[in-house]
Image (cartoon, rainbow, N blue to C red; front, side, top):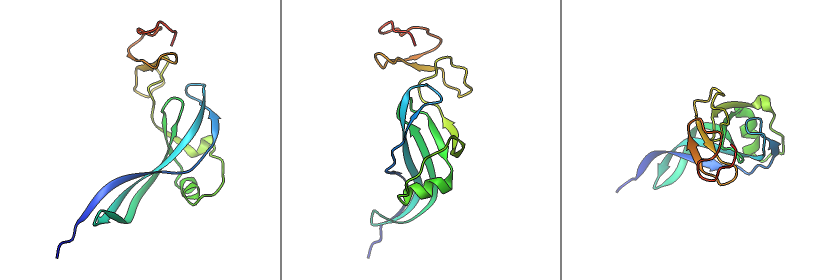
Length: 132
């Protein structure tokens, strides 16, 4: 008799809808909430999950925040609530960094006109000429 057992990491997108003005890029965006976890799988079916962490990704600029675990659990249960700025801790910046000095470690800029990603200290997009 064979048993196929494995330990894998996974991600589950949670149903959540809250529109906000992004504090990083200043555009209108939506919180995309997801949970990451480690799972023990038996015959490719996750049986036991642990090491659960909750994250929020901004739809406008791609910035990722760690979400307070209690708020994340409440969202996973389907409760209707509003995420407050105090519930978020910055983890990773998206490609939008207009001045490259926010302490995020990213010097990439994404053009709001054509979507081109440029490295460095450009004031204008090298592809279309639009101001960053």
